[in-house]
Image (cartoon, rainbow, N blue to C red; front, side):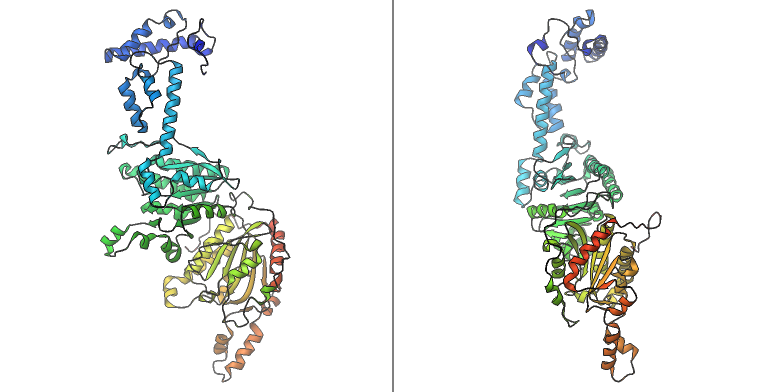
Length: 620
């Protein structure tokens, strides 16, 4: 128990606390025997002094009480204590702690003194953990326009909500002089906090500590927060800023990566996983963000690649910069590895807070809901003229999306990759919905390899977390050409087909203009268990366009124009599909918001399950 006064240190009679009972006498006797053995081995010094004091103590002789306590710390000389503390925290003892140790070699340390010493050690280690790699390295981080690991968490989480785990963890490596280079927290800050009042688990790699490199203990800290997130059902967010594996630890570091990878896979579809790349992420480290649900990057300060520019130059003779090889622009526009590129650390963290607000905490939690402020019967007469009468004139599908959903808000994901399809999050009556839409402004809205893969993964995420999917269709088919065929458009296009067919969440589809060929089937058609499917009055649902169809059907007819008009009259409208029940209704564009809102409200209680199986075999 804590000591409260000088009387506690020197009482006039034995206290009644159980620790000073018969068991305490036995413990002290054992301690005396141990010290006698150690004194015989070590001769004189502090141990011999404690041995003599203990031998003369009345505690053992007569079971009367003495305030002396035996501690391994008290057996160290002052110099040894300094070295021990320095090796554990790389911080010199404070004046108070140093003063406490002056008598350690000549007298036992009292309980009060030990408590004060431990409190000072705790304070020193906490301050050392806060400082990370030290002021010079923090200044270097700031000079690059980057925040520190702790500053990032302060911006990401609600004020005062962060609770840190494993603040005093240090690495266990003793090779290459690493035993003399230990910093509390070991290069990653982990814990949990809240975003808009909802619990999230986080880890933030600290580039000022060993370049944010991943050690065995570093990985264990990340795994702990991922395990806790799985246990309670909360999103996990990683702020990546790391030079990769800690080379000094060899295979132990590689094993740490594999442990993280396994948890990425286990958590997939159970809790949302988000990676924010805010610095380097190279080598094997890239595969953890690749397996998370969403990966965001910061422009000009973050990059991802498996092999760096030097290795590329050695192997392929190509000269390329880090930014060209794996910068934010590369991965958001060309590779599709990242979903968004942010302007800077502050912009990234603010937008990440907004993004998390759309996601459920886990697959067993309901989707987020906030009080709706946008009337469901808002005037949308402008939609009646939003689609040009000429099928060859493009229009912006994003404008339709914003018009239909709450407050004209739409959080688009992957806006710069595969621009011929649009994906993102919106709200209807305050509840999150996923939106997938063809974009006539790019490639006339055709499906190709990149757009199929982009949309397929998004649909699977929404299905895993029970978020309804609203699809807007204006697709003339799959993009033709040898590049697409050689690249595997058949296999990649099947991914989107598979994703929609497998999804059991509410699915509402609106055909705004064209739905031709196999692309009609793929885009959440009634045949793929679409719940409600609608078409606008000028929609065209057919195997192909009228001109191409006429040239095939009446190839020998001299009046192809007349035949083309005949085909349009028969098939270039929504009525044929409606007659067969493939379309539930033909609606006026201005009523789209009201119709979708009503359907989603009805479908809240939808229950649909796929047959029992280990897993399907999606054409990866």
